[in-house]
Image (cartoon, rainbow, N blue to C red; front, side):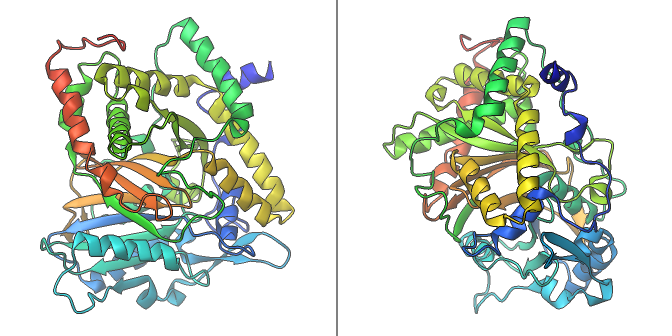
Length: 476
């Protein structure tokens, strides 16, 4: 009966929802505290950093950026506070006066080191270096870095947050609040509402629920993914060096036209199918036969009615497990159907609620006993079972501006202590994917990224051969 009640209260039980709280509460949440502790245990772990990357045709002035910080970012108390380990235990947020925030440190222009302009490779190396150095824990954990000029004539602003400050949804909501268009531009849709539950048959519903129980209670005990060039051989020893790249953009209008040919499919289903096909092509090109490639997907657990930036910055998510159906990746209708079936099952599965509840209680207990080394190891062991972290975060649906300059392109990425990050992001009618690998695993993420556009073209070519909404299953 208790499990039935838990299930009927989908999409999340009230105990998992974020409740409104001050961004400067005395003590961090269990997960945020565990992330901060990773850098402070006897054997520190590389930081988990989230970055928003803004591309401009011409660089905004430093004074304009500092004005944005003073008038928009620092109005969110979590960005105006330090995270301090206190003698009594735990990590507390200690407010800092706005006048004491050192904008010379937090808002900086990068030295091009004698070059007239940077290449994309220079930019990638610089971002990787941010992860190696981390942020100064004696200050608020964020930083703006302006790169005046790339070889294509554009300029770039890199906004970095420590994951303890904000998870993916909170980070995008915070970035959104920095925009000149914040009051008038429509907010990203999934920050305002939950996805609709799929229409499943009774049998499919029962199957998804039953498997969700197994995953929820036994997920951490299930076998780890097999070794591969994308999975860390020693997951307790991640590298500080991350290598990141971005795929070519794909038009959302084209994706929507393709998904219309697959009955019941969503844009998300098509994008995940493309990512699966790109991974399969990478493995085939490397001559590797990999049977199972899974990812942990952080799923937002906040109440959609709340303003994230004023009530629930920090970390408020539950882990969902997604298995890339790479065995089906050369058969377009089969891979789309496999992705759709799995995602539909996750939407009605109790695994998310169970996993989130167990993780929150266990990490909260360890934090209460100040056992941060054990909490850190537990997180690394859990994430070390899978190959990747997968995120899908929506950006603004139309072009926006920042510090008086139109944003020509906007990217989003995560650098975390795991072998592979696959980050799906949409902005102004296009979808891109960030591929970030650990240097101890694959040192050239471009080997994956180059397959992104060809994989979509293969899906599009198949869709062009069938009638409208013709594919309802893996059999065409």
